Length: 447
Image (cartoon, rainbow, N blue to C red):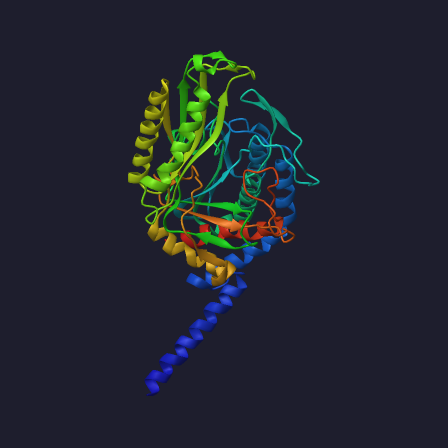
């Protein structure tokens, strides 16, 4: 027994000596989860202090919106900020994209964080002090330009995360790659762009990315609420165009025409039966939407041609193929019955956003620890699309949503994304910045 007591005394004395040495060197003798907890607490303190800057960045970007592949002011602002932090910066990636590289003080994996930068051709109605008054000519029509999907917030939060992580650079067990991506909403006609082009140009290489995280603001979800789904999360997105070729005539003698407008209207109604009558909707949701119908230029002329364009959203490849087939069959058959002909083209834009199941399972506890389990919800797949899919096809990815519904939202008020009245609550930003940082640190420390 005396021998055991001596061993205990020796161990206790050694521990005390080690602690005193550490304290004299200003080093905290912590390991594992304790080390992470201390670092995350430091990160949270820095992130909270940055909130006014993050809001200011967002408002500047909101007031100066730029369409896809034209994000020049936004890219300059991002690059200057990253350079001021001592982060390696590469510009002009995927047209106007900016990529920053922060090498931590210790070896470890490469974690990519992504934000999209582009605005939309929408005229803003919201009464904000930083409201956009930018205008442009979009496809031959005068329109306003607006951040109506929250990309301004995404950029600002990632700029904040870059500053926070740069402040703890020496403690990072790996490398962070900050990807500021143009043209998520799609490049201009005839141009390449978005995540697809950035991947093509090697954004996930040199150094090779191990995992990628991304978040999207959600105007309809409560402030600070995280929502996610393992596996398929955002839908596949295809764009279709149907051109009807008829026969022109005077509007007073429609019997002399093959009317592409009437034929087009019948095709539109026919397309509505695809989802309701041809697809097993109890398996997965699907959408076929007509977004524009254009024909003619005068009230007393039946034109020779009419064109419609629209979007297809699916969460299942078999259903996607069925929709493609039925669009062609319906348009061709209805046109033939009217004596017209059609050209149908379908382009596959965004793939299914697939959250790596193992990575999602690993990282959801990080969001739960940050926000509380009650504020991290598993949700059904969305019929929206996101070109984050192109990154997640190449490396394991985890994409999630952050709620930012304004507290003063009135019942029935439409703050939906892609609308003139879209707005978000900036009080959600600190949690978004912290989420990106916590995911990065916890993933690195797990390796």
